[in-house]
Image (cartoon, rainbow, N blue to C red; front, side, top):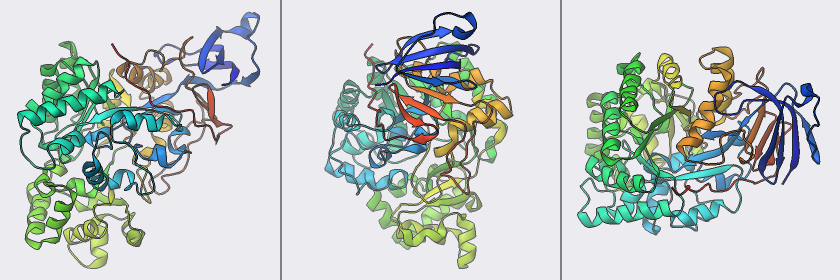
Length: 536
């Protein structure tokens, strides 16, 4: 561990309070002393084996990514500069109801296939865990940044019910309740759902409420990707607020956006709904990313009936001409539930990654553009790609609205989440740029948030949602998960054309008091561990 004094830093402490000048001493992984205005006061300055001159730099808590998809990337890529270089010191994974624990052999293979586009298939890793606790133990062997885990409701349902679109039996529901409880007892911080992803979307609200009651008993929170971000988005948000109220569970609305043409300019309606719930006593937070396009898998746009039975059944239906035509009609005419009830506009669906390198020519083009090059209908191109890549393609979906993005990030319960998918040739730049973009573009350049407010949205507020007693603030006794950045130059480097470009203006990042970024370069330190739920 470093014995370190950070001299003359402008401390932005994560509470939203004004910055102050101080010397900050770190020892044995914790902040042991904060001496305000030491130089100006002429008092005895603290000593340490190492001194770091922070003149002109802001010292803040490490950033907490409330919505990350690094479930396998943390194990596959020890460097993990995608997040470490942004100042992220903690990621919340297990998102959108689909991840890799708890599983058995059958379910693990099915989930790996279903979310290949998020994390790759994982055949380069030894996936030697089955329970939540075993997965967290695997993280504890050493990772770049810390990670907290949400029990994925879709994975739990796949394990108990399978991939069928039917209600759970009483016995199945009881087993799901036990699995959620076990995951929380083993350290998970809550429960996630993906209610436009199979099989989680097959659960009715009564089933979800039963699982949320378990979460509430353990002091966790529910993080739903709810049933629509397009047509019916406001109704879907209200549905989750009502469900959490019924279950007595804390609620965190994940990647809280208002997308597609039907929702342009409607963020104030969402915020009014949330304010009403907060005034009535709801324990409610949300996260968002500071970009307009969304990102998911191409298969996720398909109607839910097509995926009933699991990934192999979906591939079978895609290969069958009659079933494929029915899928096309739902996508292009009716508006599939996977596409949030809005008929797909293939000119907004850009292929960002493929599992098979032979299909790389599709990447960076919309489905419509590739179809025109091939002289065929867009659905024919999409279908060809899904079959050839075995559900592997990831997409950017250009359906967001800047005024909605800005309005939502101003809200008092807002936190930051990248929703970053790290696979693919041209991933969404949010995976590499979310946090410096908040600080540089939205705080410094546009003034949407003050610097102190912005840091609080990215640190203290998410730490409070996670019930972390010693993270998220620059405070004596707290963990030394810290970031030093230049407020005049901090900026995202990632673009849509070059999405893996590192940020600028973040020269130092510490995890547990050890430098993971030093002088702007990644060290070989693996100080991250699983951050387990704090018992009530």
